[in-house]
Image (cartoon, rainbow, N blue to C red; front, side):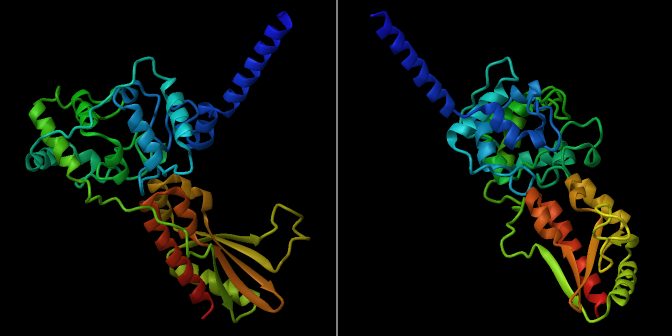
Length: 349
């Protein structure tokens, strides 16, 4: 009898372990999908500080799940459509493990207010941070693109992802209570009435269907590498390239073999040369919008001579920037693309 009970217990443990093994691991999923932007412990970075108590106290589990699912089109936060509902729920549970209180629950009923008056209040109290049209702050949540003491960039309130995730009651709660540790104050304590706050909520909700924040776009159809053939030999092409770079207000930093640092100078292939160049004001503007642009800076064009042909090649900034889901960065990298191509074409005229 004892052996039967022991076997049954072992079987039960085995079944439980199998079930547990199939359950999503919130900590692992967060580390894989979220930590790079929000920090390993939710302290923030490019993404908002999720562990901030005042943030946790003013967002529902449904809001967190919808944010993961919808993202913020064009605003750095991508939509994690590849995750299952169970995986999203596991991430939400893990985020909640940093908070001791009970998560708030908000009604989905619309707040009734006067959006016309709300627009006036928004211009007076909100636009300085969230933008005249609710487009949010410029840049990301890392130090280079915001003041060092500011833990979060003002979010875009006209963003389709935000409007899909945040019910009116949640927006109202944030306006009433504010978020300690961020510039978001309590507007009730600042002197607005609850009727005024209802009007503000109604105005923010009026953005829905007229969202002005563009999606970041797809890389489909874009060539990852820009290639232009030169009619000149390698030496002449390099001289032309330097002149074209200087003509476009860049300065040439250096040129070196592609194999520099991988082998000795004597063994490096002299027919494969990288030319590095920079426009400092342009660089600072790009870094302020999204410091991750530094992953493919400084600007560079590679010149290769092979089988009697000389080719100029460069990574396409448009393709790289779209990996970051930042429409502001996309616009700047489109300009980078056009300047790269113009330089390469001028060098090969």
